[in-house]
Structure formats: C-alpha cells, structure tokens
Image 1 (tube, one colour):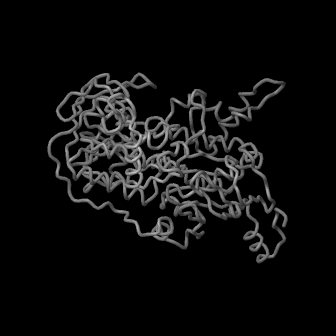
Image 2: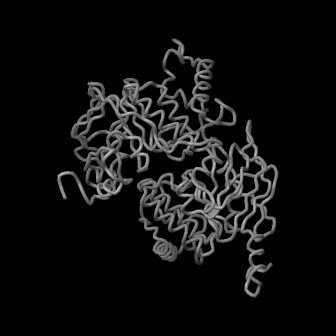
Image 3: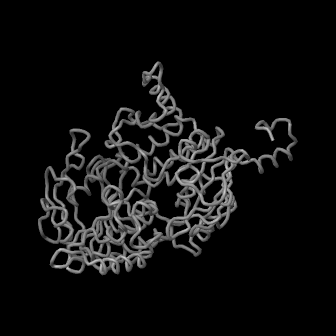
Length: 527
C-alpha cells in the first residue's frame, strides 16, 4: 500500500491502518549469561500512536528497546519498518532509519554544553567550518516550538536532571527522528515537568511521529498511551487498548497479582530526636546565594519526615550536607545527640546513618564492581567480611549477598557475581536499598527511593520504610512524587529556594495547598 491513503474506501483505509505498522519487532529473543532477557517477543507500533511498554524491573523492556536502537543484536527474530525488513547493527543505523531514543540513564557528555551535546555527531559544517550559529537557531526554534526551554550554553554537569532530560529529547527532535523511544522518561521529572512532557508527547504523535513509551507509572500510561504491551520476566503477556482497561488490570498483567496502591500504616509514635539540624546552610555551586539557607528541623525515632518540593530547590544540597558529601557553610548537625557536622562520610555511616542516594550511578554503585561487592561496599572492613590480616572473606560476602538478593528480590543474570552495570535500573535501585536498610541504621535518609521502580517494588519499598519507622528508626524521605509524599510521610516539610517554607500534616493538608508552597506562592507566616 502507498503512504498516501486518499482515494481508498473507508473500510480499505481501516484495514491498511491496521496492517501498516511504523515498526514491527517480530519474535525477538535476546540472551545474556544466565538469563533470557527477551523470550520470543512481538511488538507492533502503529504510525502516529503512543505505545506504552509496561513491565516489572528486569522484565526486559529496556533490553527490547536497546535491540530496536541497535545497542544489542538479537539471537532470533527480525525488525521491520513500513513492512520491510531492516538491519540495525548500531545506533547510527537506527538514526539513519529515523529512530531516536532517550535512555533511562542519559547518554550525555557532562563537560560539554547543552548545545554541543544536542548537535554531537551531526554538526552542520560548511567548507570544513562548524556552523554553530545555524545549529543554535534550529535548536532554539525546536525548543520554543515544543516548550523545551533549556540554557544552551550551560554545561551538562551544572544542570538538573530534568534539564538533562530535555536535552536528550531535543537531541532526538534535532535529528528529525520519526520513531521516538522514551525509556522511563518521567523517572527524574517533577509533577509539573511530567505534565509538560505528556503534552509534548501528544503534540508529537499528532504530528505523525510514532512513540514507544516505557513506564512503570500506570496513571501516566492511562493518560498518554493509545495502546499498552505488557512484559513479565522476559515474556510477552499481551497488548491492550488503554481505553478498555483500568490501572488495576494493567497492574495484574504486570506483576501477576493485585497490588495495594495505599500504604498500610498506623499512626506514628515518635519518641526522642535522632537528627537535629540547626541553622544549616550549604553554599551553591551555581550562584552566590546559598543552595540551603538557614534550615532548622528535627527527625524523631518512629516517624517518617518527608522533604517535598520542586526539583532544584535545595533538596540535593541538603542531603549532601547531611551525608557529608558537601561541607556546611553554617549551622550544625547532631545525630543521636552527637555532633557530626565535620565527621567524614564513613564515620557517619558507622554511627548509624544510611543513605539511599538520588543518583544511583554517581553515588550509589560502583558500576564495574560485582553485585556482591556493591552490597558490602560500606561494610567490607567489618570482621565478618575481612580477616585480621586484611583479606576479604569471599565465602561470607557471597552468602551475605545471596541473602539480600533473595530477601529484596534483586534480579540479575548471574546472581552475586553479576556486574552492576548490566542490571536494570530498578534492580540496581533494589540492591542499594537492600544494602542501606540491612545496615540496621538509626537514621535512614531515602532520596527518591522508588524512582524507576514498578508498582510491586514500590509497594515493597514503602512497606520497608514503614517497618523502619515502626522499629524505632528515624526516616528522612526526600521525594518529588506527591502521591508518595502524601501516602508515606507522617510530617511534610516543603522546601523552596533553599528554605523550609512550611510544615504540614499529610492527613489535613491538600495536594493543592502543598503545590502553592512548593511553587513559592505561599509560605508559613505570610499570605
């Protein structure tokens, strides 16, 4: 059939639309050592549709999309575009075919500017000279057209993860890709940015672009996707029209059971103070103002205190100051009654502080270490794992890692010896959470702990946080997810421009009220 369907009868046009797919991945099988990541999977993407790919952590979603983008070669199956078989040996082939991908973990050069990252590999040249002004004009036009404003001259290392996300999307649009793959695109975005991205995706689809959208967030899939295909443990479960199903239906398809959306917990019974922060300030690396300015708060044993706010309002620097990653420019920190303001990171850890970091790759894992070595990263020097002569007790490390892998359902191809880099993002996150919670901390600082996790894993992690609270630990949760903030916390502190502008009880405050404080429209003591 030709690309132009004008002149066809209505029925013939419907049949053509059904049979003519932009992309078909037919009977794809991809194996890694010890695991079949994709087991005979068939996915068909219609032209101009938003097609969601749903599945648990490690279900094979990112692997399947990496096959389409040429990062992996399948052992079996074939890919067709517009009905014709194509060979995609690498990402350059994919780009030549009009396929672009925003990866879950961004593929950006941190020391380059935003503009340089966008045009990297497809720089416009004339007589051997780079035409940067021409490139800038094109990027600015695309940025304005799709509402993707970002400072083109800023270095990647200096901008927020939300801005890095926009940079990745602009990379695809600059290359004029027709097939757009979004791998967990909202995992690092604020609620406002998520709404904007949903609208951008609708606009792109309306222009005829075909979108594959990987997500764990059922509400987003219901809002933006036309159809949804579900994978479970590497196998294809089925494809449904989103208008014909409920979030509960998708959840059952994904994990094979009903999942509770509401967190089961009794009222908090806080006791003595475990974390006491007094007039804390942390300098900003981006401007002269403090990133954290004169912040005072407490966390008690037996409660979950949540720091809420729009990304980039000082939450990251607050946690860096608490954990020892950044020095304070003013103020003090006490934990369990002892001043830890100037203590090194390891000392804070051995005194009972656990930290689930915001960036699992930068501060959570050594990606080229094995899973078992990552699990004992903060405890390898203990007598259980190291002899008096300084030799690692490998048998003990292996047994300890195997226990945590089973307890926290960390899925990996080769068990404890799996390289952390080869694991899915969600299972990397589970490994960090297992390590930090099993340390039996006095204070657990959890920053975006459920980022990139599926509904079953989110349910489990929330249960773990509540169990830590009920065991008499102090929990400081930092989250951009308003549902998580409202469901899990016992007290909410809102940060705006480096200051705490309000304290709330999740039982009485509304999401709308929180939103006003998060946006700076209101603050306690002021109208």
